[in-house]
Image 1 (cartoon, rainbow, N blue to C red):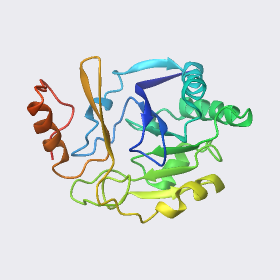
Image 2 (tube, rainbow, N blue to C red):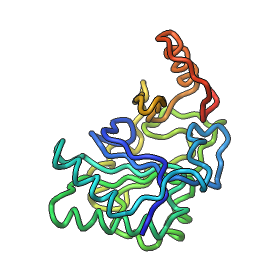
Image 3 (tube, rainbow, N blue to C red):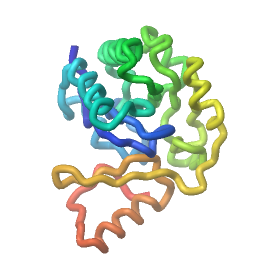
Image 4 (cartoon, rainbow, N blue to C red):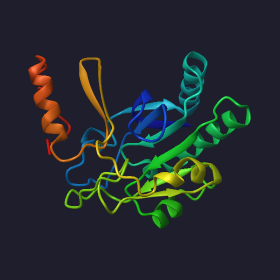
Length: 219
């Protein structure tokens, strides 16, 4: 089984609690206005990766850096690859049973909670929490890990309630953001607030980094 990915990244500290592994799927037909991840929309982009290779990557992180606090799955829209997503998360569950992965699984989706469960009905007990709902640029929010006020953080398991129960209404006075450079490309990880992307572009220009093209429109 293969899953179409935009990228994998470690460490991720801006999309969930602790130091996490991050997986961005490729492909999204929801296409929210103002989305900062437009590069993940096209289904014919990305790279088809064996699920077993993703699981091996998680194992390498645990061996080389210690077990990550969790896995965040975003994109792109994860529910548009439901079979591959289920296969991946069953593999993560096997790693848990062997003690090779002890963190939580957080999944972002542009669907509401009911639609998420309807499409991904094989994920019961495998996803600990979801952040649901499309991004709405007209509904800004300061809620932690969310981009607009309509989006909800929903714990789904006992582990999910333990990890996320205290964060349901947490407001971030300064949203966590990461900036990394890889293969000549600048990646922003996190949920920017209005003006953050413009400030990032200005700061990069001040350091002599000129962006020739962007996958987002500064807001």
